[in-house]
Amino acid sequence: MQGKFIYKTENKNLIIFFSGWGSDYRIISIDESHTYESDIFVVWDYTDLNYKIPDFSMYDSISIIAWSFGVWNADLILSQSSINYKKVIAINGTLFPIDDNKGIPESIFAGTLDTLNEDNLNRFYRRMCGSKSKFTEFINCHKPERDIESLRQELKETGLRYTSNTHLNSIKWDKAIIGKNDNIFPYKNQMSSWSEYCQNNFIEIQETEDSHFTEYLSSAEKLIALLK
Image (cartoon, rainbow, N blue to C red; front, side):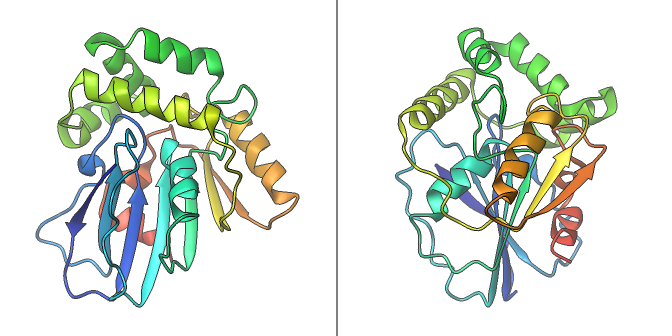
């Protein structure tokens, strides 16, 4: 696991963003000329979870936003941490990341891992983005500086960890944002997963017209706006 402040000033508010597979800290765009009302710390690469989380005790308010595979990983990591967070939001991900009915279908996950190469990675990114314009934006602004082997190992270890882990949801999720045009975590699977969660926990569900690569990742302003 890796982490990095992509924006840090004297703010008393912090967003910890748990990114998805196939990404790094570039997933959120920062405008260097803009002043933001929250610091932003990005977490990515879940190959190895032995990572010393920084001391965030100087912040008055900490919010968690997790996307894609970052949703399950955030749940696992936060259940074992002492971070005093106030709000937790899931975007286009579930607590059952590899599941035929509540996550990414198992055959799709296995196929992605077994055939991963540069061409298939770009096909994944195209499906993730949903449109040519979003794909171009992703490649130009958000594509990670990681090699294929790094991405393969992350996917492999995440799959092994999920199938062998007895961890069940243990943190309270406040909101789930579900993209109707998500080609990675199918819309119906996300709805099934979070509707089941609602049976025991209240959670706000917001449906959007987005693809998996949601508009909320296109800029720090849009990410921060989720908390308002």
